[in-house]
Length: 363
Image 1 (cartoon, rainbow, N blue to C red):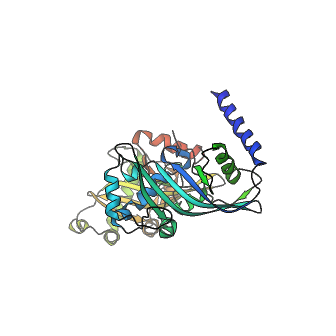
Image 2: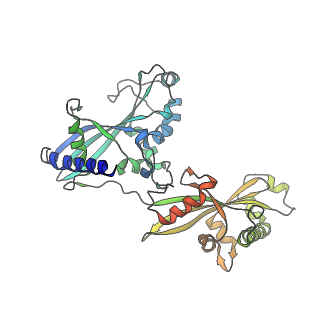
Image 3: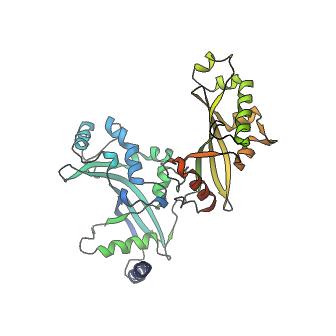
């Protein structure tokens, strides 16, 4: 297996060296069509562009609030009822389709590669196995949406990455299926040549968006009736005392009327969930408290880090944020970014956060 992998690597290197001399050193803005397969988005990318983009725009396509054109020439609109009819005939729901096509313009000038995204087209397969062309969405119609929406990220991804920056990171796998008038039907190798030059050739400069290593960590501190160690007991005791002394703070931060009905009764905390934001400084994880969710009598209230600071909670003579960063208590990870973590894998994932490169948080 190692010999085969080494041979493939040598072949790729040879290909990179051999075609570099054949390609033009520069070219003006040229239409480029990229095919992105949902099935080929490996975990270390951190996000699945195909699935995430389809889920993002799907509600707007259903209502007709987003223009869906029959083709990239934008001559005719696909009405929302026609879109729904196409999906009803599809083998899989629109959001589960495998193929995304990205329309771009590529340019190399002064040994620098740049690109502009023009739009996206979406396809599917009928129950009879025939191709469905759902239509084309222009980038101008969703630019603000892409810039202002965080793309769902697995444990290996970044929690603060927008769709826009994900697209401009060029970190996702794709295949160049057309460049100018060349659809590579007679020369598939030319596709790899052009793609290599644009994305990997060391003689070409490029400024793709850099993905910052950021994680959102959501975990529950185990209640004393589940784990009765001293730290967990103390954690719940101090929070319970603080809450009962500051009931108005709870009332100010929840829309539930239930807390008013139990206002004059002692409040017991059933569960404590903590949300943190982790970043890296000199390769050392830095933990920042975002919020704490308290479950009281089956009702939830969320307190921000600022509100918690105002409560002045101290544990073992430490501030709340300092104390929870040490993780002396027993806990279970619920989510890393938007990926749910099974209870039996909590400890494994937590160790990987502390030891592995952050694009390789997989057991």
